[in-house]
Image (cartoon, rainbow, N blue to C red):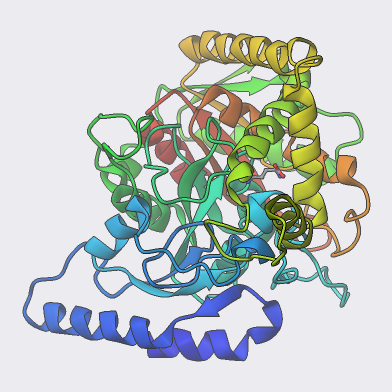
Length: 451
Ligand code: GLN
């Protein structure tokens, strides 16, 4: 813990943390020392982790990287972090992220962007570590933490993992409790780990996952031994390659890596099959209706009364309005506007209801294909990490980052990003495996081969 705290201090320029909690960390590390000495080690005894600032941590400021939550110190612990701490993990601090997890580059954070520890060969341009879990991915890649928690609503674990050469898994919707995680889009949000390798990711998910009566969408199914599954290999598995994921203008490095991934899986005994998912092209538009709709509803609670920031005014309506005007950043306001619009009486049927119908069809199409194959293999992202500032003025270009990841969220399926190689400029690229509901085991088995 002391060594990691030193590394965090030295790497301040990455801006990966919104707060570091050395006293708390050293206190739990001492408890871990005691347990280790007594031969009573728990599964994650003394493992120093970072926690995305979207997870409520008891007595530790939790801001979701938003001004509006400034000074909010929860009186309770999220179930996922409580599970990790109960297994002996030590929290080093809270990790930076896009504001309310809305973004793909960590640039919407009130706490400022995070810098990717990776650079293009020979160039000094600062790159994004991805988003929204950009603090998590950068901290793991720079070895400021042994692992981190993330959340993924449309790709926010897998895209940052892909941009930083780390492993990130979004489990099945319902696998990890959402209780105590600041809500973005409740029907899409899932917690998961970002880690250095597949084995670490399996260990962390083991601890994070499990039924929680406090989250009505959490599912009461036993959590299998994920680490044991890594040894099982993939002989005889059928792996689908969806042809609609081959985009025009996609960098050739990504395509070659994808081919390479198929080769690795085939050599390990899997059968590779081309499959078709024609509704893929609707996933991004559907996501950018459903996610803002749910966000606009979830964010209604930030009114200057219950949490964090209040901009005082004698008139209560003015107080609400001024608090929200000052407290939310531009991207969050954009989502609230879009969400409110698509839910409004005159447009509900045309946008929100229609999007829900298409979402159901996407789910059915995915389920149909996954009856035939055990896993799907795709690239994680349509590009490698891009420069800070490169896309921040163009929301649509930013949203395109999520093109390969949102389908798993819309259909509630588990998806992992595994670092599979480097592009021509020496930047990491990830491959994604998507599995059947609650079959993270097979996802891990495939990931262990790709790694
Ligand atoms: N980039 C997507 C968005 O901005 C996904 C974010 C996420 O998964 N939290 O909504």
